[in-house]
Image (cartoon, rainbow, N blue to C red; front, top):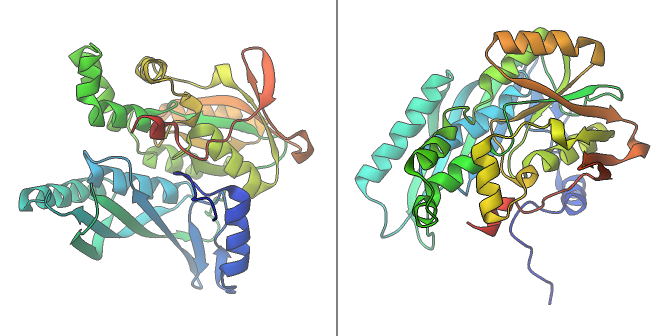
Length: 337
């Protein structure tokens, strides 16, 4: 009997084969189904339409906020301003009240309004067999043809930069979903509240990060770090661009709350879900100017490595030793939640 697949992302080689074998060719598709590319791009004549679908499966608290910003993140890294959203909302039986549903709709409304997105439809139902709410968001945007940014345009010699810090989203989820566990472990209430608020500050949105970077015209590629964390996103970027990478672990920013929670639960922060962190590459000569512009926009930006020849592989300097860049098929969060 074939062994069941584990929780987490599909193996990249398996998924690559499926995408190659079972996707339809279309002359209007500029960016289609491909590992490492965050959104699909379709040529409609004078402009591009960009579209993305994303599920929220970890979080339950503030799930409406999550679904909007996770979808928006995948779109703005294309240099696109998102416009329209549809959501498929599946609610667990025996747990769902009208008040819960209205609060969820309110969350989506507030989050979408904050980034100029109109909710234009979707589907909502109470579903048999679920133990928690699942939302799949579908986002649509548009962009001029000369403004599109892709993941696959990372170039050998580029500097790799990130915004914010490792594990921002994972920190917020742990503090929200496992708050009682943290109290039992004698974490202080102000620590728990502070970590929960990572959802908003530094925040899981990269709306400002990505559009500021795109508007500079200095970035070659952008993507965001979601399930599987930073290093998994770097693997996907490298596959999309057909390049190698050299990363210096000590240069990657991590906040004390994230570090403390990862130590407590035995998690590797490099593999912890990290919405809020954007990855981009730019020519080394433009890095200083790019960091300055991002800083003026209120976005912390850090150089963490280089794009290398593909023959050099994917490597990371960690504790004075150069090792293979880790890949997390299952997010570290699955160890505890």
